[in-house]
Image (cartoon, rainbow, N blue to C red; front, side, top):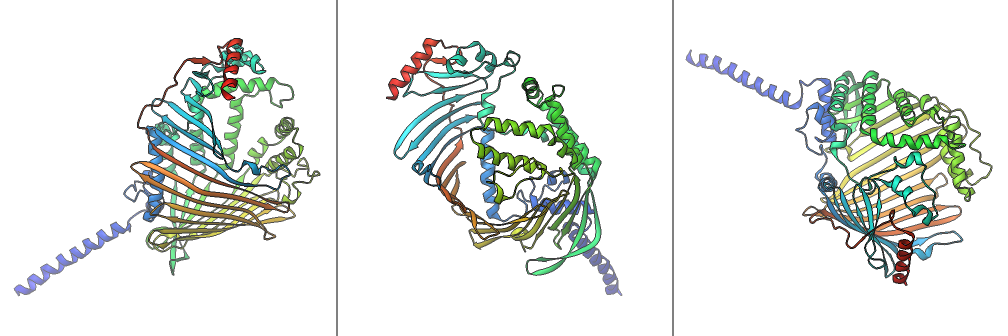
Length: 597
């Protein structure tokens, strides 16, 4: 009897233990997740813990790079290292050389082979100062093009071989200083209109030094983060109960279908939040350019409504995007049996009438006239640009075969599109790493008969332990009401993880099987002690047409490292270009000529 009592005691304990284990497994595998949480977890695994999706869904325990293989993580770390250096300051050294140049023109530029440039410098992003040194070369001959010192208030240039000291150009008071100087008359230039001179000022550092700051980004504003959270909360996800058979690895899987819905009001609210942030963060810049815009409106044949403002134009653009994007969006995603994103599809009809109206009427006509006026000496060139650009806007871009036909007239335009049908799909077929093999399509179809249809397949696979090979095949069809132009694109790249050697080739073939574009690249990258070494061993670009072949070959190298010393400052006496006299200009010119020869 005693053994039976023990048996009845052990049985419940074992069952409870088994149930506990099952519950732990179910929780660990996400069996109790809501449809939204499950889909967001799948997306987080795809895009990594650094993505917005991961941050807002709380899935920050996934890998920083998602479930990407280690070799992709190493490649991304190079980019992360450069971004980190940009925030603290960096030194760099770079150069490029044209090793070969081939043209079919009567006035050939083949003699430019051997031409190159070298640029080095230091950028202090904290104190907002920079130093650049520029040198040109032709074969074995090197010529200094100056040393440049940059801050928020001015840009200075020194050329010790040609003149003493350094020339300075003030940028914080550019308009007023320019008009008060003899610089315009000495250079044969006109004066800036008086009503604009106080408005024309800028930061030389912002203009010439690339820098990024998370503090200035849209996401750094708490109100914007709140708006994004509201947008995330408004996203609806439901499991439809449908499945889709998808080849994952070597086996077909019935992948569960989920519908993600972005509500129209939520999309509109997010766009309006960005619009408010844009106007508030660019208030000073917009105020400055309002004066430029008002001045242009006073010019004859400007085509600008004097009663409108630059802010009105920007607001109308935002309104166009609201009409275009502020609709319900539905995305269907499919999760495999490991809760990974196996496929996604999207289809919608978007209203383009508001954006089309911005490009209609006097605006495009006036802009085209201005282009023709300023590029009048190049009749064939401006006809081509005008037909391509403005014809594209109104849906009448010419057939490629007719680009050199002088009878092509972009004014014979069909109606501007009122709507555009968009459909997109991507399917992943990899086993451990889903994007190892993929396929998809993308379609833009305007209601005036023009469309762009792209279908593609590709794969990313490991040839050996340290060799990644990627290839993408894409077919592009550009169609109008009568004809379709076909283009085949192939992107082929190999990446060695040990020495970060990257070789790539991109080819484009037209419907007549003519290779109209061929780009080949061979490069290496290495990170040592936070220093990035880049070498472009060869970049060759070749274009072909019935007229012949044109090609260019370039080599380049660069190194980037954290700023280890103070940025140099100019030496010698300052020679302000806006305070110099006629005699000063004459002496400077004589000094340069004497040293040049």
